[in-house]
Length: 275
Image 1 (cartoon, rainbow, N blue to C red):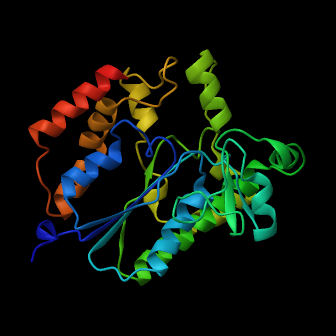
Image 2 (image 1 turned 90 degrees about the vertical axis):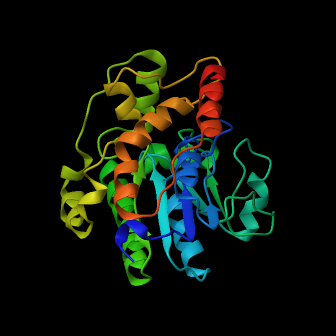
Image 3 (image 1 turned 120 degrees about the vertical axis):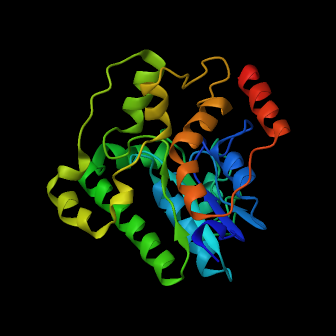
């Protein structure tokens, strides 16, 4: 069997709100393209990279997988996932962003959980932001969890194709929000050049640094990014355009793929118009 004939049996999807959406996203498009026998979709609104990577690691460790492809979409590094123990989960259970288990589901009050609030830093997380948050350390922590996922996939013979919703080594979430919503200038910073991050960076393969993110692709091509009415991320047709340019070439060169159906294309158009 050639590489192009390789059939994906299990597809692991993970990501934050750009992936987990009522609108069709890149994830729906990839599923339609590969038609895997099984999809493990761990995407959840508000999560950061620690949760995204760890949820994939948890799924791999607790599943018997063959011909598997792990495709997480990672996000900006300043989305902080707070790990909380059983005794503390209950106090956050009624928050707007509820604690999650590693399957992307709301945690029970007696479960270990993760409190992920996207770019918001409420309550005790705000204390962390004001007193302890450091871009260099945060960048390193992201690199280390990425390295753990990469090594596990290699050890278990699972293909890994990381995607990115934004240029995570260049921009913070708060700055992207200000640019998209309030037209503030978006200034690029190389977080990986900081002392500790530059030391850790060689652990990772180049795939983690050489990519075209979804939002950057949209900005570079004058495509819509954010709906102030619905407060949603790029519409479905932007996901499709980006997928055709940045995902399909890899998939079609590596796996058994299928053309998108006419009904799927029509659904993309309908959802994009509603957006």
